[in-house]
Image 1: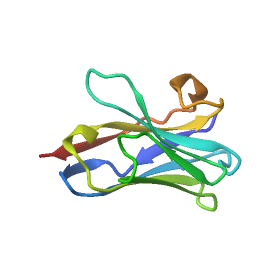
Image 2: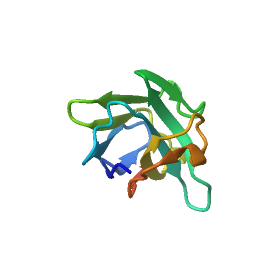
Image 3: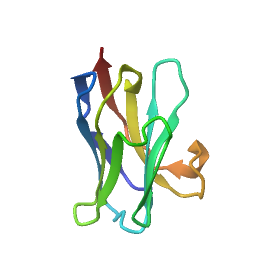
Image 4: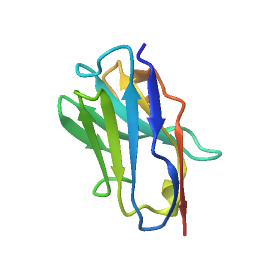
Length: 120
């Protein structure tokens, strides 16, 4: 397990930007693939982005608007979110990919989440 703490969420108007951070402690994440998920009220947690071996992967719903990155020196993963839409409103979580797919079951060490609210 890798303790993870997300931050950077908040309230933003549609079209705005936010950068989420996911800081790991206790263990280095340099050798791990890291992902971001989100969960809107009444909906299941869904995959947003993954960074694995330096390569990013995105859900179709965020492709072209969100950018995932990892700073191994800071042991931190980021999610830059641009052109935000009201439907991006959710609690955002980061996690370590222990499996090989982007399904929830392939991830663990979940953080506590950070709320992102996009107003129209």
